[in-house]
Image (cartoon, rainbow, N blue to C red):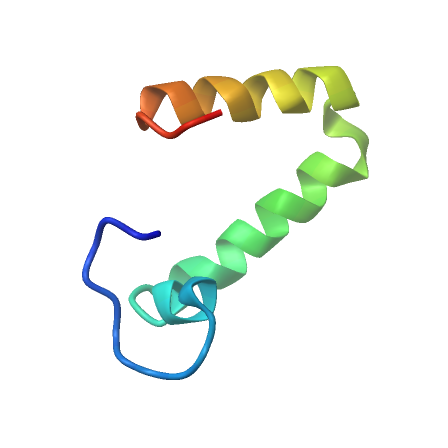
Length: 60
């Protein structure tokens, strides 16, 4: 569940989150495609995801 105020609507939480920063959506999508295209191994990518979760105080 998001810890920020999201716009109202019937869309998914993720969709409503991107409505807050639509310009960032395209940039984040390109970054994600690059990461999953082989810039990092699966092990490195998952380690990065775990560390980001720790930094953001999210459950792993």
